[in-house]
Amino acid sequence: MDNHQTLTRRTTATDEDIANFLQRQPSLPEEYASPTEHSDTSHKRKQSDVAFDNLNLGQSDLRATFELERIEQGVEEDDDQAHPLRSPLVSPTSYNIGSPTAQRPLLFSYPAIKNMRIIATFIVFATVLTLGGVRRSRGGASSDDGWGWEMVGEGLWFENEESDWLEYYPDPARLPKMVSTGPQRVEHELGGMHLFTDVCVTNNIDSAKPPEQDTSVRGLIYFDKRMAKNPKRCVPCSNKAMNARADDKWGESSSLDSQLGHQCGMQGLHAMYASSVNDWNDCTAETENRQFMIRNKQTQTPSHAKNVHYFEEPTLLLSFKANDRESSLFEFLFTYLPYWHVFRKKGYPFDSVFSKSVQGCLSHSRNWFCELTHQMGAFGYARETNWEETHATLYCFKNLYFNQQTFSYSRQVTKQIMDEFRDEVFSHFGLPRSRGRKDIKEKDRQQLAMRILLHANKTGENNRWDGLDALVKSVKGKHPHVDFHIVQDFDIPIAEQARLFNSADAVLMATGDHMANSIFVPDDTVFVELSCGLLSRTSDPRFMELIAGSAISVASSACSDSNSDVPCIYCPADQSSFTMSNDSFAALVDNIVQTHKEKTSLVQDGR
Image (cartoon, rainbow, N blue to C red; front, side, top):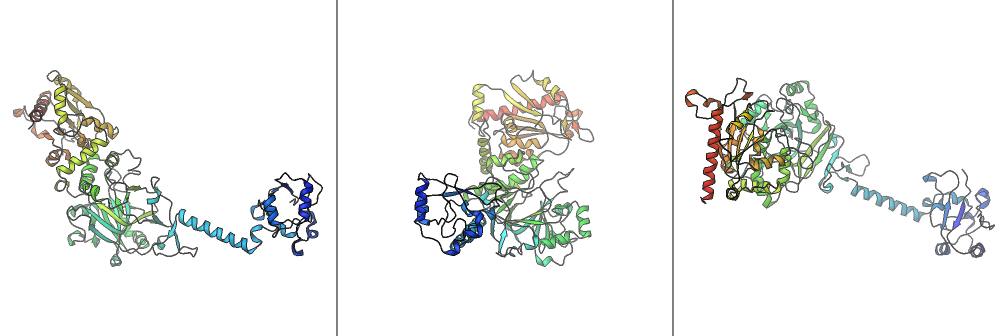
């Protein structure tokens, strides 16, 4: 490498002035002035014939007058072998140009600068600890660096990194000892929601597959050393065993599964026991236990946890049936509404929401239920904790809230709570008709047509209504002031579904989970649901009471030659579809129009 370099100066002084000035400076000790050892390091300026070989630079004068900088020639040097003249200021107490010391790095030349480098390095390291996602462990084993720190994973969501405070353990053996507690009721007067501490959550991957397509089932690893001698402690109960104990409380002897020797848990949350994560890994790896889980469709993911994300923030476990609007509404949201009513006033006890039903449920998902909860602000300012697309990560929580889905909403959801919920939804979706009855008077004043919303469920597996279009044509002449609006498909955004139902004075449809949109109708709407089998939960009298609606039932058993005036449907043996006669449909429409007229009259009369 060529060690010859050129020095330039940033000054207006002449070369002769510089030379005279430098000659007045005191010489350095001999140990710093031995140009003969490195004669090839003599530096000459192209602008002048003044030699720099024996120049002694004064620190204070040089700082006040000049700034020397190095201009490299040839190949660039490595950073760790950088020449000292890269520094904008050159100290004469450290370097004499042409001396052997000039080849030594600046930061290693004197103790004071060494100390400054150590201090700077420590400050940078401390900054990384503070901002880079490193924090002290909850008391677990120290990491390999010997400082007693635990690495923490990066933020799992983008909305609010500050609230994403977790501990990441690349090895489950390093996870501190966990002792689970719970379930504890959150509100004793309400029931339904429970709190667990120091538990881990798994995902049942069998239930989400056809034909069940149930995305709401979770496994709960409960850490209890008293179960260590039970060889089937890690095996979750079958769905059959769980359904048989649907009304039993966790901890009661009646909820104990005799085959497995432990509690089953609660609906939607299958209990598994272990003394540690590694103990759970070892237990589920046993051949007999693995076969039992496969046979009973209780395969869990992760099947073998290789790393752990431990969340310290209080978290709500959001589990619902993502493929069923009706179930997600009635089984989760309506059982949660009483808590939503309380939490809006007292504050939400959780800061995060964790859901394996739908990825990004509260941020970017267009799932019907996710959009609904997002618009109504169901969980306050809680942020969603996203999960990784991996089968090796186990998610554990210091405080986990779970809403029991089998809890009956009818006992706790009052008319006041339902009105509050629906007013919030109407407002955030910007629905044109309000929930109350004032729009009935306005429609009557403007003499607007009554709208009947119809749907044949043509894409459904069962209960498809054949011949609906022809039936509608047959009655239009008799009811010219009725707007018959047929919805071909409900595979549309929830906002469009909401506006369609909001525009209806009566709903006449084949059964299906699209009936969950009934929450968007104004008060006093008439409902007619047709089915060869069971009706949806919309037809429940208690629900009709909560939304101030009225229901007319139509069944296949009502069809008979002697009673032709009663509306009925004809169903085949497989109940895949049904038909309706013109007379039955005409009688049904007459009934709907008459019922709506009676309700309108009551409102107009102020009764």
